[in-house]
Length: 455
Image 1 (cartoon, one colour):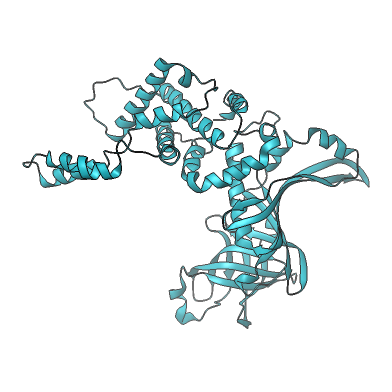
Image 2 (image 1 turned 120 degrees about the vertical axis):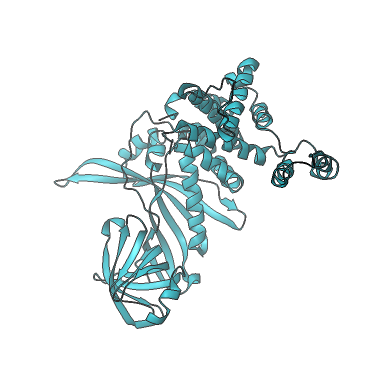
């Protein structure tokens, strides 16, 4: 559908069909999906109060007589003769008037990098079979997804074969992959979207690439009529599919390493992402968007280790009750009375957090938490481990509390920082992969693949 933009047509509010305004739906480089109108859907006396308040629906019809529904459109600008809306979602080929009507039976989702992840490592034998038969597609059915309130969804990774024809002769084939999400009974679109976003997060983690949603369409029964292909376009900007199909592509979780247990791994990721989403974001930011300033990459990884430890191995030096009852009052009493009031308040406030584990202890515990049979130098050699931990703590403290009179040697050159960054990344990776239920044998293989570090 994105290729057919802009869409020119007439637009109206569901309760005011007679007031139709001409305009176009298009992609804005800054705001994403936008609707620009040659007039106003709302009365002029309430336009200014409508900024930031989404309209549930705007209906439309293109000049090609295609029905369109826009969901959650927010007014972002207007003039005397025009108005512009930022649109959350567009459904092409159908008209909705109620939120509860947007219920699908099946939604197909294409992701950037899904082809590369699947095609380079999966279906090698099946591809030869499919080439020699009339099969148009094959797929991998996953276990039903259960996200608590969102349950009983069936997922399948589909591989579709498209014939390339020249002068009425088949000259070759192209393959495309997509995630098919289906349910027995119609479910709200937002539930399908939540699963799609979580799968996008998993695929980004697995491929170490931003695996954004590129296309969506669905099957829906509405007013006793079946719509087999409702195109869906979302607000966030989608990338054109310009993937590198290099056979040397690996990513963090190559498909063939988890092929036999992909359902368990994806379900586990969906379960953990609710708790570890900020950890995954910090880790991925060091891979997908590496800073030209290596210091920032270091800070992100340190923060990622701390965030992961708080969630995976929570604890304090003493219980919170004992700390507040026995320890904290004594610490506050020890503050000299003659100190400046603001300084005493600062000391008192900082003491509130003295029961938190130190960075040194957190990293040490994360290394101890690693599977026993990993072949990591930082796990096996105590001297090397202590040097790495000491330098991470030294540099973090140097960045956080810069002191121009610092006399100790702090190894903050680019080469030293890169080594520390790689070690922190390996600690995070190995712990997270183990949490996902990936076997130690495969984790050892993964951490030995240098091509994962594209940057």
